[in-house]
Length: 348
Ligand code: PA5
Image (cartoon, rainbow, N blue to C red; front, side, top):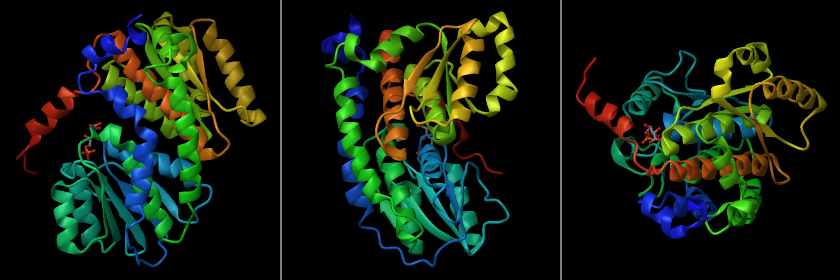
């Protein structure tokens, strides 16, 4: 079995995506120490906008899902060049771009500056780092050498720590306990753990040639989206995500079609989910199971963050194991680079 042979995996996984995933808990520790050095002396913001794209924006989505029920400020993730009209001097804009060279995020930086917003930058370098240093904008300079999506620990934790430093929330303690939960989960998901005891390997094998379709709810929306994008970028396969309760008002009808047999629905579950969610997910699962094989990923851990990141960790590993099964190197993303290169120098 290829997934149980580290040597076979290494032949396909040329840039060691598996090793990078296995090091995620230690990267979280480094990210926490690094971000904690930031000095921030803004007044408490009324609104928070996290601006970024792709693998950098998802760190903002995770922070929003985690903190939205404990933060008094409005919090939104913004993907684009120009900020919404309501961005003003009472708005903190966190510009997150791993490379620091993403043109949409640079556009958002310029717009935030024009609108006199409070600003903070999270990046590993590039233009954004230069701009922040020149303008004296608080900067969290994160570790270099990752693909943006594999720097999720650095991006997410830096954003969360910036939010803690506004005085609006406490984040660090729950992050620390979550890191311990991730260390223990890693033992189950890593390459050395054979298929029979490894939920991520089993999931990858069950999906096979079908389209992974991740269904989240409540705190697991960004996680569902993250897993979908990891299937896209690591395994290079089509994937979908939706969330409860919304999907029971539209998506569910697609299971009348024979085409839905192409899908492999994966339900994110939490043993502590409310009865309302539980009943809705169960009835939807019953309908969907008439057409498709399905799977569930149960959240681990005791805190909201541990639950969110445990599901993400299982999904991230599964996406890389699918890549291995398909004999595809998980790391390169040539189409994203092709588009970025083609757009260099295009002016408005
Ligand atoms: O996963 C990826 O590589 C992309 O989604 C990037 O994150 C996205 O293109 C934005 O680039 P950056 O994260 O460097 O701002």
